[in-house]
Image (cartoon, rainbow, N blue to C red; front, side):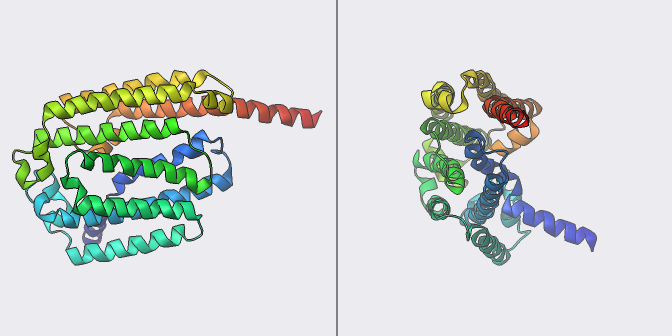
Length: 310
């Protein structure tokens, strides 16, 4: 009985792709870069927004799997997913998606209109992507990128803070980079693109590599410009954020290495959660960024506390 229950739970978790929830951590970027990371009110709202997006993204994954059911049956990796493999029926998948959608509504109910609008736009874009746009060359990768951009904008709207245009551009280029390398890896894995994803026939590995180079360069340049922009230096009272750029450059290089040498780009989440050098690099970037961003604010707070004592 326990084995059956465990197996069913595991199948459901695979269906809703809990591992992919890591993408929704983009919603926390505005919280970190707005100087509100250690304020409980802002953190609680950001966490609520995070789980609302997690539930909605799982609904989108289920809809996408239903739309791709026949194609995924011919894919060497995707055929092992719960729906193509037959471990869960379409009817049960629809019921699970309805439950998740209800949970998303409950979480977002008391949040502001702008955040709700972001959820709506994310859902509509992904529905269009699942049934039409993913078959249109170039638009398919751009709409994947829009999904990441909506996440970071939604994170800012949820806690009602300003988000730098440079940070949005960085997200755009980074998500394009991930989408392009995903297509490249798919091309190198599948033997017949017509039976898996038709749009793959419009791409080539050389073309994908060229786009990956451009988007990788755009990511590094946009992030570097963000760290040295006048507004960034004014808000954080420091020019030291530029020293976090090497982590970004290393992350891009490491990712390219794994795509070209290990052929892991088809699943970005797998790279981020299993590759030790990548995990360490991301951890160091986060810790260094928080240390630089909050050093001035912490020093000011401590100084005010000392002044109150004396």
